[in-house]
Image 1 (cartoon, rainbow, N blue to C red):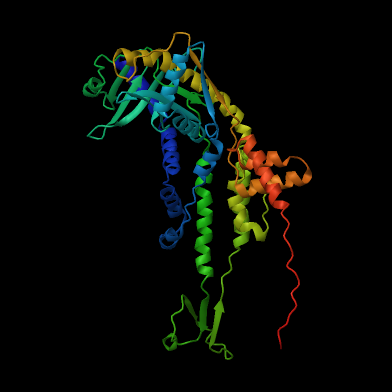
Image 2 (cartoon, rainbow, N blue to C red):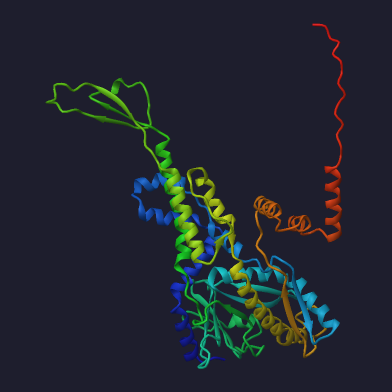
Length: 465
């Protein structure tokens, strides 16, 4: 078991990342849907209590973070092919069983989302009720630590924030290649929890870290977060809420009166301002007027769209077409900025990252975890992989989904310019169709176009007027 000095040093190191974990926790909550809380907190700091009491009911909680992460995380949206090399057909069958039981593509897509959200991701294969399973650990719940003097970005330990005790004390699960200990923040070894995993001695039975770690930073083992992601995720709905708040006042005219007796007003306007004229002005007369507030809605929407567009481009997420920001398109400009995000420049890099991640993960499962699970009868399998077998993964043309209306418009332009064929255009519109089905579809379209419609014969009108 780890010495207490080593445990204390690792926990101390993990606590140094407290602000980063808090930042990641905010991203986690917003990505899961709790944007409103953070927008409310920011507005509360910016507005007077009276103004906030009104504005909080008109908040526009549009969550752009999930939309952007979805646009970035596309490599598991297309067909993923995993193939055993240097193995047997039985190895391939066993791999297919693992893929099915673990829902590999779905879980790895979640890891891809996590990598784009936090800039790192931690993947853990495990067994549940006799079946293999896969999960990613959100980046607000772990710290990767390296004591490697040669490669400080290669993890030697993981500290997992593993919930809290009944008394509210933080629980840490600490892993190395050879050890695994569960301890609380008061340095009490939680022996009951360790016994639940048949691990009274604090030994890592796998002899290697039971995780696969991916990190976008080439220099830091725990990547710094881009502050702009959280900032822009909150500022966009705040700006839209400001506009919503202002429009409420534009919807009601403000009546005012000069030298009027308000008791004689038989009406209930939204607002009435009462003024008194200069008592020394002999020409003063009672007066009633109307003030209509004006809000530059188009200008504000254009500002929001421009800021969003500049931010997306700074992240390497260019839009697929130039955005119009004139008055006519102000309302649609914001939605277009999100709909036409193109993350293809990042796709190739992510494919290379996850090829390496999958190679490491399947090596961990096939040659370390699976033999142990079989030997302990923890898994509903008795077959094992051959020693030389390894997995190679291929990602088939991962491309982000495009709005169908936009796809139709783009293909129409390409056809008119002679840059594509009808067959290719139909294949883009109906990717699920085979070549033969496309040919038959084209013939059907041509047949309908050649149908002749007979003109009705002239009928002599014998009616009498």
